[in-house]
Image (tube, rainbow, N blue to C red; front, side, top):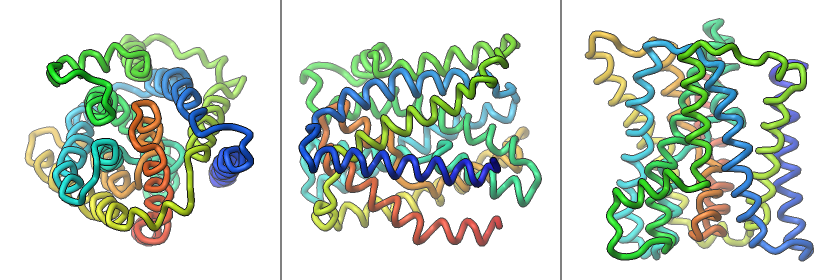
Length: 327
């Protein structure tokens, strides 16, 4: 099966899972509170396994070190910049936390960004595998930054803190939270790669990564479906607009600015890596943002609605431009 066909099947599977979760709640087979334990298992264990195996196979190169500096900035700057704007719009704590995490985290992984880098950059430059490696590294770094920065933020706005706990304490607490298992798995994967520990290729014989992707897709999209209410879309017009401006204009401009500074250094990021960063900069709100909202008692219904609308806007606006530019 070709990569395009595989991705199409995976997208259909995810759409079915989303619809199944939505239908299960509508038919009262499951309550929307069920989304939280489903997302807990998915984020902690399934995505943790994917992070470990993906980074284990990523060759350690000097160019990748720039991603370690770039990606946390692309998470933190948009997330913290929208907080005062959300406050002025009248958002409460739980809604502000949703908007902040949505602004900071993008759909950079295999379900969207990494696949686009693999196909578009591979077709235009013949370096699909290398582009995929950059994208996988970037999404895992984003996930790690999400745990170290977005978890404390979500814990703060979701009410999981006491008033006298410093931000340092919140970060430390989040790092040792079981919900941060993905970060620890990613660190193990990097260590194994740098130590040149052979990857157990026998896992490929059993399509281990593919199985984990489908398990992660089910857990993520089914859980979102449980919290999704299509009628909520019109309630958050200002929030949709703010998020669209941040995602499809603010972050791309920020990425170009950071890369311009990187190019002034003696060892700039490779040209292909820079193109990956630019493509990933246009990605819509991450599914991880919805899962964080459910895990930390933010406004999960709002998060699901923002994710759906922002993804649809991406398909209608930036995606055709990217395909025309790189196709």
